Structure formats: C-alpha cells, structure tokens
Length: 132
Image 1 (spheres, rainbow, N blue to C red):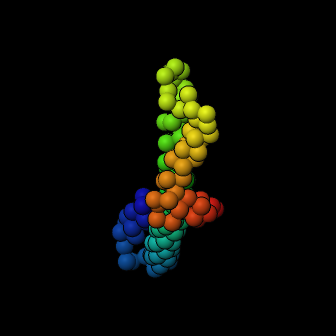
Image 2 (image 1 turned 30 degrees about the vertical axis):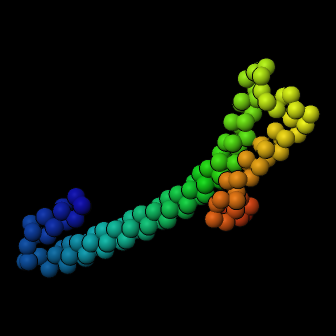
C-alpha cells in the first residue's frame, strides 16, 4: 500500500516530460497493482481454507458431543438405581426378596436400554455413524 502510494507520487513528480524514467515508473505501478491483486487472491484462498477446516472440526466436535450425550442417557437410569441401593438403607423391599439382587440387576439393564429404544435410530446406529 505504501509502496504503491510512493510509486504514484514518484510518477507525479517526474511528470510526462521524462521519456526514460516515466515508462519504468508506469511499469513499476502496474507491477505493484498486480502483486496487490495476487496477494488479495491468496488471502481469500487462505480464508476459504481456514473456514473449511473450521467447519470440518465443528462437524467432528458435534459428533463427539452426540456420542457423549447418548452415553449419558444410557447410564443415567442405572446410575440412579445404583445410587438408591448404595445409600445403605436397611429397609429396602428388594433386599428381603429371594432373588432381589437379580431383579435389581435386570431392572438396571432394562433402564439402560430404554433410551436406546426410544431414540430414532437406536444406540448402535448412533455409535456407528459417529466414527471418523
């Protein structure tokens, strides 16, 4: 920018009377303008590539967040059930049953599978599509 301004100022100082330096200054100004245009083009290319990479990274991050959301939904119910049984209550209905632990374990697995059944494509489809 400053170089172009200096070349234009030099051309104005020389004037139209100098036949030897005048055309050289005109060539210099044209070269400077060409370099400026090329630099602008390269800057636009770099900006486009940067936006493309950022878009790709955003898509990958969204896929990762999607997987974590599914994992959280699957393990939320079993964690809640395990938390209730981890409170050391002495009066829990399932503790006195003959197969209380088995019923609680089955109930925990069913609670973990409920989010998979209520999603549109199911848990396994979500995990398969989230890969690289």
